[in-house]
Image: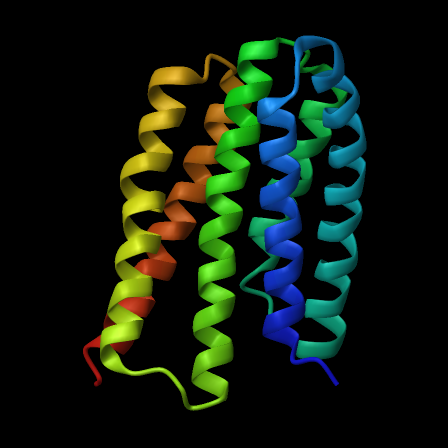
Length: 172
């Protein structure tokens, strides 16, 4: 059976690809990609939330999933501005890349293959993207207020997750 972190990492990388395809698409096709990818990602957030609640009893991911589903629903329903769609697409790619790093960390930890150096490298990359690049993109390039608001809430969750990760690094 394939370990859950590898399945989650595959899904994260698929979402990175969705964002990159949308970001690099032309003005005529970006709306089509936005609609297709939004539906797929909303369905993922719903099914993964159910899985997290019923199978794993982990509620800490649910607020993130609710925000994500709302963000994609809002994008699906209202956002057709090409600049905002491209900012959204590249932001999703970066965020999902960091989620893939987190799943890689969990996989390595479960296989007892992680050490302090690898954990620090993953933490550094995650932190730089989530705390520096992510807010920079949102602040300077996104003009959609609802996107900004949701992304700021995700930023706060990221800071909390980083704090927990940092505390675990101190235990080495």
